[in-house]
Image (cartoon, rainbow, N blue to C red; front, side, top):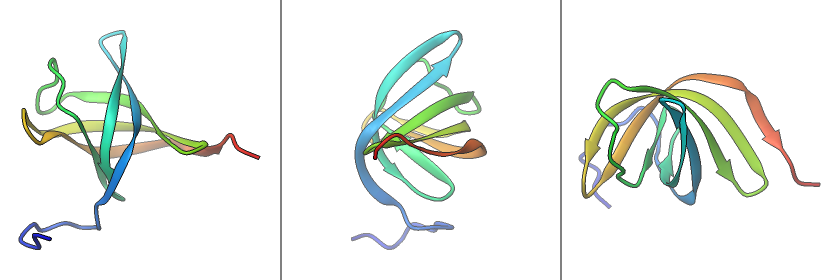
Length: 95
């Protein structure tokens, strides 16, 4: 594991989905990892650094609605978002 990155919180590898609303469209993207301050998705076109979006992050039977900002993008590594605001809280849809 490469420890040369400076982070405010640990990044947890993830294999779930994110629904991202931008410009009136909703895109479903693979969620690659998540931390307390942000998340990363697979690379998709039409996002630029500074874009502000609303997204729903899905994990298991739970989901979380957040506002986020694109912090970086790379064709091979994906797109990194900073969580700006949590809308509501975690919604539990399981029993």
